[in-house]
Amino acid sequence: MRTDQPVLSVVVPMYDEEDVLPMFFERMHPLLDGLGVSYELVVVDDGSRDRTAALLLEAAKDWAQLRVVRLLRNSGHQAAQSAGFQRARGEFVVTIDADLQDPPEVIAEFLATARERDVDVVYGVRSDRSSDSWAKRTTARMYYRLMCRLVGKQIPFDAGDFRLVSRRVVDAVNALPEDGRVFRLVIPWLGFPSAEVTFVRAERAAGATKYSVSKMVRLAFDGLTAFSAAPLRLATWLGLLGGGLSGLFVVAALVIKLTGRSVPGWTSTVLAVSVIGAIQLLCLGLLGEYVARLFQSSQRRPQFLVGYDSLEDPGHHTVTE
Ligand code: UDP
Ligand code: MG
Image (tube, rainbow, N blue to C red; front, side):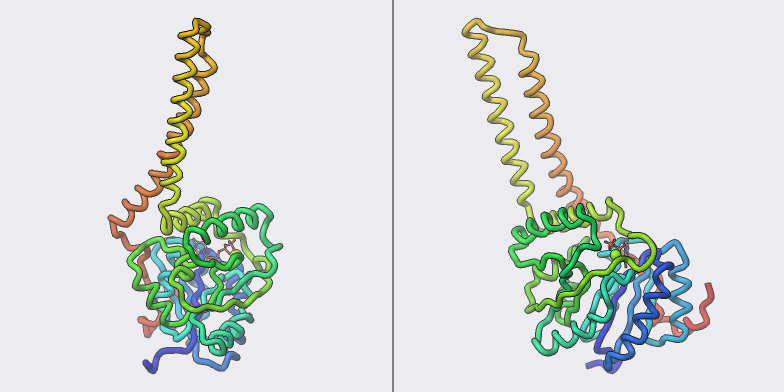
């Protein structure tokens, strides 16, 4: 084991979290110091536009275990986690949100569970999601039910990105060639032995959600297209159905015409056009999703760019912003 390898790395992606940051550190600092293991706190600043970066560098002055990694631009929650995974050195890596919705006290339980039960993954499972809106809970439940079938593994429902993984898992994830990975799907898919710890998810301690609807939809589509071509097959089936329906329309129109009871077929025309139009659009949309994914991965663009890592900057204590 390398001597600079801490037992625990805690990875925290942060995007514009100046409001919650002081509270987060206030709770985290004594807690991590009291765990009784060597640790590093790797904060990945995901291109924040507010004072997050300045506050981080300030806090790092008198907290040796605090490591600041800054991405040059906002790359998204999952990409920030990827950056954290690549930089973390710990024997175990915990990912946690900055907004204190995931109670940091559970980290001790994660560690104990991993060691006692000798597992590589410990999922934090929310026993109570009443802090999330009804719409979010319902769509999440539907989505995870679908993804369970597609991934072909049991994905713990109500588990977000609050979890512990071992070094083996970190190395396996880092070795995946794909971009746009959705951690909460990729990790169960890898199939390492796992356990669960339940906790009650709190309200966001300060600030507003950094997950816009468009970011949420992006996450859902990234997960879906990464794991399954089933939607493409669905498009084929819908296309066949539409084809069958329009075939029936043609037969019906011919029969009506041949029996001499032909009427101006305005209604049926409009119906046929709209049904087929809708199906075509749906199929095109689904194809577009896959093509976009192929396009992105063929570009092999970096998923994120690291602009700064306080570990590589011995003089960071004198950095002023
Ligand atoms: N986050 C990030 N980049 C983004 C969006 C969010 O690093 O583009 C971080 C954010 O700072 C927080 C975590 O991801 O630590 C979860 O975000 P948030 O709490 O806003 O999501 P919600 O709990 O509302 O789903
Ligand atoms: Mg949150």
